[in-house]
Image 1 (cartoon, rainbow, N blue to C red):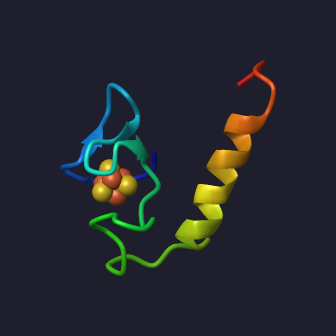
Image 2: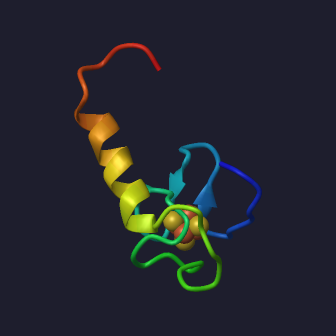
Image 3: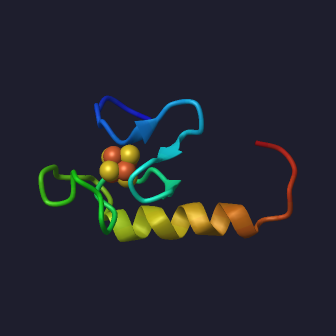
Length: 60
Ligand code: SF4
């Protein structure tokens, strides 16, 4: 997921070990929150992720 290095990122699961959910840099509780500037707000990206999960399963 882009060019960042986070010690809490689990590459195997593509998720956050710290928050035990999807890695969305800058999201609430993220160690990068406030340290980086993102094109879209973290909350917006969290919403996008959640939306994707609720879609009927199928193509990726
Ligand atoms: S959400 Fe933040 S703390 Fe968690 S793995 Fe991603 S960058 Fe690291």
